[in-house]
Image 1 (cartoon, helix red, strand yellow):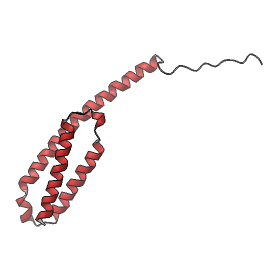
Image 2: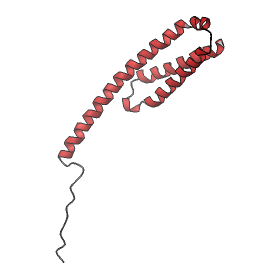
Image 3: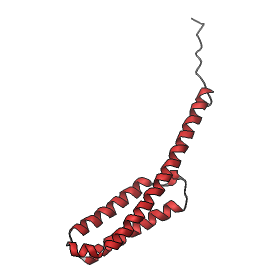
Length: 120
């Protein structure tokens, strides 16, 4: 049982470290696959929760520090993702304003002219 729990902790730590590295290498927000990251994190947390719930309380208490560390890492990841989300939202808003301005000048989409057929 304890080996399963240690494997769950290792898997979750590995996943979180990989996500932290991906977020701190500073790729543009458009390059990040946050849906995959979210799915992997949920899956790893669910595996850990299932493993923990199958153990007696006395054994769970032994892993209190590991759980605390994981929750701190999760908090850091959440903050980084929130900042990235703000940056991305600002960029998308800026792009939308630019597109609206360009539409006003009819740049890139010339109006179609209809010619009357005078031949009859």
